[in-house]
Image (cartoon, rainbow, N blue to C red):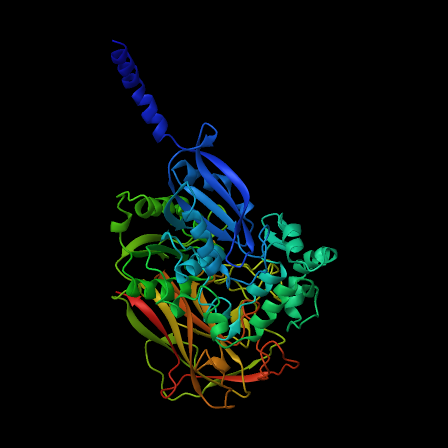
Length: 636
């Protein structure tokens, strides 16, 4: 009878054992595990494993990997525990040359090979089931792309968010211009040192000393590097940056890279082989399912949506999905961008979305995420405008599922620039051009836009295009449209709502009296006066720039012939927006947007090596032979 009694006791205990096996796992963490790369350099990782009752849980688990230059110890414990609780190992690694990892830091360039070596190591561990998913935003998104380009073993699923890529086109170089948020990134040693604009004013980063100490060639120079980060505004006004002329010389790896990046305009192997330029390495890119995430006001939105998603969904068999919200960089969990509020439904739970993706591809759980629409967009502008309790402009909007990107049903509709300042679907006639003076010593201030890592240089996202004391480069409180070097073209008040969803491209006929200059374009939603906004609102939707010497090719420069009209293509970041009835669609044309982009000295000197400035006489053409226009993707 003893066996029967024992079996009855075991049977009675099964529910408790079953409940324990399905209960959330605890987290057991191994910190600063030094993992050797192929060249012997050891990179530090924190390894978080499922546990029960204080000991490692038996069995093999899929792993979630994030490789970061932003200090592996800064990843929130709550996020790690959320994934470990569901039966995932989580590995967070400092990239080469950052924080606890050995070696010399070269932005992204080593991340493909180092990622391969990390995933090989994971696949050899007794707790690994051989499947790896990746996560991370921004730079941490680029490390995912680098692993895919390098064909990393065990790579099974990816969620690259606002992922850095295709740097010679947009993001670092931008149609030949340089995005100065990267100047801030390097001078603050990766946004760690210096000051940041916060809700309570300017604050010091907790990682300041660690970042400076890791980058410094001498421990005595650490304080100088920290101070450098607090002087970004002064240094950006003193450009160009020259070797050995600033305390950045005490972080020689950082100085060398920044100077080369600011001087290297050609989109050649320096950029295309940097590590995560997806469109330049489609053939090598590993065929794995990926959920691409970005925002209409993100600094990498064009690369994620128009380049990576489009090219990979055509070239790969694995499922590629895309979601675009109204977010700034990394802002998926908030419902506003700059001054614009879109409503609580615009925010998403990114951690939960990733978990569904990992469950589907790393555990084989049929949760339906792969059956959902391949593209999900937030269409901005569906709300009744008013000032919210938080003082923001309510723009509103709604989510919509789509089958492709860009939308096949969107009609590319030209709106032409006219000499009288109107913007309309009517083609221009025989009218004289408009000439303005572009003084590089007095550039147009940046007010919002698709920026990140901006620090104290500028505001990000949706902003009213009016100067105020909060914009440090503004000299008055006037709207930017009042400047003589900003040419404004706008429609009459709209008689009906117009939805614009897709790529935003300006075809601009222009000339200059010098060998080189810049042309900028900005799309603006002009709100009429209201009780909450007596002067209305000039809300930026998108902007971009082209450096004239790169008008024909991003791979090689060609100077202008003074006075000769040329057609310039200026592609802004994409959008999805309803221009409401009574609003105006506006396009601003100028030659600077500082400090979003470096200022062209108009001299034709080598990039970031100029010694002179000259005032340019720049001319915009808007006649039948030179029909300057914006191509808006209008959704019927």
